[in-house]
Amino acid sequence: MNITSKLRIGGMLVGYYRLCPRKAWLSMRGIWMEQESDTVALGRLLDEYSYDRSDKHIEINAEAPDGTPLVGKIDRATLKNGVLHETKKSRSCEDAHLWQVRFYLWLLTRNGVTRSDGSPFRGQLDYPLLRRTEWVTLEPEHIDELVATVSAIRELATQDVPPTRLLKRTFCTKCAFDELCYG
Ligand code: SF4
Image (cartoon, rainbow, N blue to C red; front, side, top):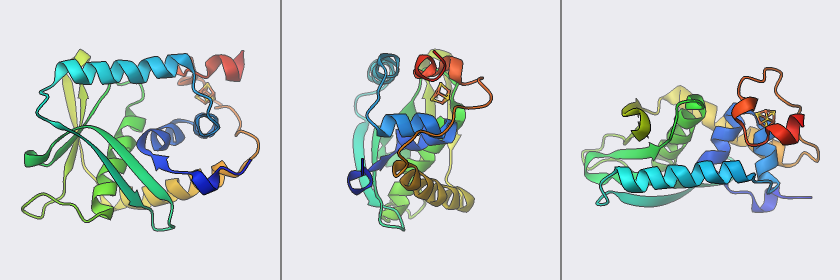
């Protein structure tokens, strides 16, 4: 199956790839477990009921240097303060969350979008259930890493078989694909 021609890479896929390439491959093949849908739906609900509705939901489209279409669906943006927000229920996949927000910040820079004073946007991870927030910035080394990640995901999309399972199962017990991979 050739899915690269219609591949659009989004922030969640980048986060999945950072956690586990197999998870990214499965989701690119349209395999979407109920638990995963519940987690995304819960994130949306938390966002809806925890924050000021004057903030904006925004979608950003961009192109990677290799021409891959990129898309970012951002939970909330406080435009006047130059902050993109992503709401999560727990910190169990924090590294993936960080890369998801860095990816959105990258899409802004790809489009030349800055704050009115020319400074770059910042990101913020919001964990309303934990009453905690975390700032996210985009550094030059993150951009290099994102370019490499997009290329790697493109390559992954051409593979007919999924990558092997994670050697360390620390994350698998929290992953919706656990039964599929280890059942
Ligand atoms: S269960 Fe583990 S190996 Fe399987 S997709 Fe999830 S993280 Fe990857």
